[in-house]
Image (cartoon, rainbow, N blue to C red; front, top):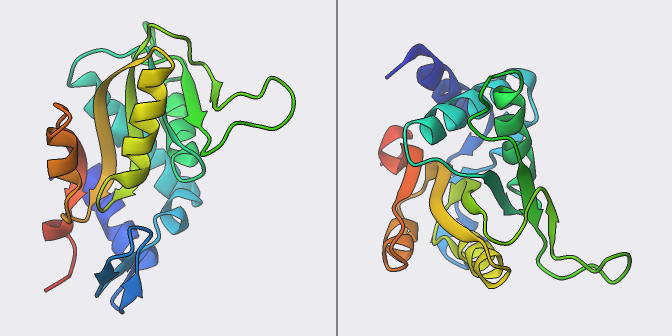
Amino acid sequence: MSDARRELLDLIVEVSFERREVTLASGKKSDFYLDLRQTLMRPRGVALAGALMLEQLEAGPAVDAVGGMAVGAVPLVTAVLAAAAGREPAPVSLGFFVRKDKKKHGLARQIEGGFTPGQTVALVEDTTTTGGSTLEALDLVSEAGGKVARVLCIVDRGEGATEAFAARGIALEALFTREDLPVP
């Protein structure tokens, strides 16, 4: 494991990980909780996450833009774009986010930012359990004419997301998995 990956994992365990019973957004019960906003809202955490996600993006097929479901993916999309700033050619130069519902005013968009139909995109998420919110974003981006080529996350909890994306023909690329966390 690289020094940057080790540092990010240590920070996640220190500020984002709790061993306690919780009900997750998926409705599943878990014996541990991950709140990666606690990591991504720290300068070092957001810098490490952005750099490592960009490195992961560079290691695979190219994409036109990176995005994800609001609100969870917004800091991560921003971190990836910040990590790509000043690089020529930029490995990714556009970001977007997907709203759960269309805005009721303005242009009534559901996908905001640097997205246009025809783009090949990567979706990012901080934590995946079943993949539900990112699968919803995948459907909305596809309906809007985008091609989702990749899905990346910081932590895959190992509770069905990998299989859900595989059923759609997409491999989930995780920086860390449940096995990297201090859980039984």
